[in-house]
Image (spheres, rainbow, N blue to C red):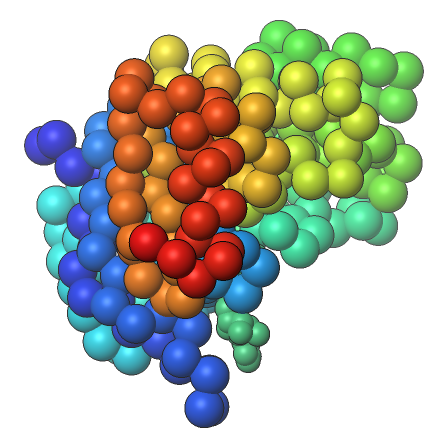
Length: 251
Ligand SMILES: Nc1ncnc2c1ncn2[C@@H]1O[C@H](COP(=O)(O)OP(=O)(O)O)[C@@H](O)[C@H]1O
Ligand SMILES: [Mg+2]
């Protein structure tokens, strides 16, 4: 199956606000697709529909070839279908230790069916050091998430997705408000995900970041996909020009 996610005619309103007005979009298998657009264009709403936070009002969503029934679409069922999301708003529990953050909602159980906290701690330790290479002094399983830097938090959330081998990863503005070094770390996680064959929908305002890691760029304007550009045919400056055109209400 070529397509990880297929969206056709997705609409969503919040009261009188038409956030999405018929979105057609495909996320291919093994690609990084950037979702670009002005504030209020509907990017986070689309992310939330894909990840089961909201149902759409109408349209078709297929995840790995399976059509979604809006009446049964929630975060748990989106996860079961392979969608792991790092939301724009906080996606980790600040007061919880790291190991609890990794396994919340998906515990490792022992043979008696109880939560195996020891194994969860050990797995978290391995995940932090071997899988994502976060070796800072504060990165131990019992550290509280509140003590992590912004980049480490994004790293933890991405690590969780890697651990559960989610085929589809959705990142909503993962590098916003990060320092250059931390953003670099997040971008290299994304590159690694693609190398391992995951598909990634990446929402970002930072054009030099998305131009580096994305295969295609989808431009969302007032709740519709205005254009999808291939990286191989679009320079960074052409991409910037095209976005400027959109936000002036042109094209
Ligand atoms: N839960 C909500 N309730 C009411 N309006 C919302 C809600 N979520 C988003 N909106 C509105 O939908 C539009 C699209 O928002 P959003 O998807 O967050 O845009 P973006 O992520 O592209 O900045 C905006 O006008 C926003 O105010
Ligand atoms: Mg947003």
